[in-house]
Image (cartoon, rainbow, N blue to C red; front, side):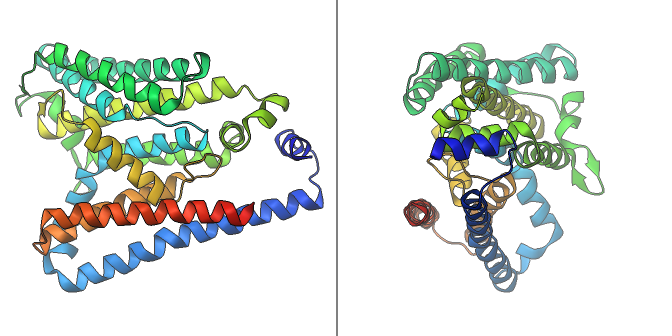
Length: 337
């Protein structure tokens, strides 16, 4: 019966009453997930605005967006991976590799060559990740974790273990630092990238196939969905996003180092996705909610910095929030079951 329901939804046959009921439940759950991150975000924003004078300044708010640009891009693409039933723990390593690749190329070639080649490197590594998971049937956690060590080693080889420093006079600097209405170009680039991924997941046939692949892979296959192909594409987008993040931060900071991403960035991205309400079991997620989740964590860090809280408490608070988000997801799935 479950296979029949999934098949009807995928090929646009008139849904049954049970299908309509299930669809309504999913929409209701989605609205609750949005409220679950949206309301705390607004409350935190108001509290910080009252308690900290500098927080509400235009400079501080733009700095938050600028500093989180790379994380937002990577988390947005990572949402598609998780919704499709995968997991990518290599994004931090890909980010580190692409920072040193873009830094090396920007030293000796035009900015556009550096940007283009680096994005292709990220895309290529993502495709390899997807192929390993899809065709070798290795658990995504193990596959991408192992790949992160391989990629990290390649990054060290590319950089020679050295910090790469670029000149501010380089045209590469303008890629992330050009100003449009006082907002850095890095923010605009990521805004449009996130918007495209949000529309891709929520408004296209591909997005429906992503959801189907993560929700019930076997039913999706029976309905004609090429699940392996869909998952490979999501990993490719994840690698591309990590490459974009690496280019943006190298341009923004004019420096690059092989270990600049690592597990810290990977788990910060994963935290933003999960806090945003994307199910760790696949089949449900939203790119806009992920963006709110990433910015919610950024507000916590920024607020604690402005209020002179100990760094130790930042980690504790983030851990508690992450546990609460995962617990809420488990509870919601049990209620639906």
